[in-house]
Image (cartoon, rainbow, N blue to C red):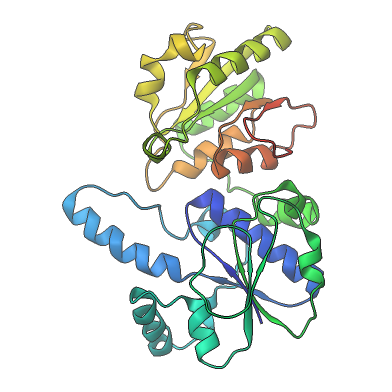
Length: 307
């Protein structure tokens, strides 16, 4: 049995899905996605909505955003009463992998990042690297893969399959259709500025990074039109000068209206259609760059991950 951790926002979910599909294609076995995280965060979201402030992600999104994707969810392998019992145990701090081990499954954990609550065999994989050797372990091993697997290699190995499965639905609303039409017609540069919780934990990129990146794009493309995507567009507008984005309304276009529970994936979709990209250090941004099929794209990336 093969199981992979499945959690976080859309970017993390998709990279974990990509990894699970790699395991499936390379071993010929189903790799189930442990979706227990979404059951517990949905409860938290409902509680937070009553208080008016929602801090958790948008829940399970893959098949809403990518109708061709076919995730094999672990929850579907159990009856409702058994799964509810497992969720009660997880609320008490007993991980799914530990519960399976306690139930008699001879399972080991392949850990890419972070701590795991598990008292069985744990094997470490190099973080954020393409390490295909982990699929060469004996086929009779039951494995739980704990990580985020944010690396182009997992995608590139099955890119033709994944480009079909990770195909966005057509945009149908008037405003975003207009954005999309303008992006396609111009020498468009996506600028993704992640704020939100990244500010709190100290991961937000500096204004200098964006200003330097904008200058690189301007030097390479004198007809560049910059499309700004962010979870805090007001901050971006207030700091346009230090971000290098004080270019005039015809050269710097703030893409508004999608940052909510229903539509935030459309920002990723529009970013992926731009000719070039200035991305942030988020999985959402990196995924948009991987899904961008422009062969001549210039991508300015703050990490060492290949696009």
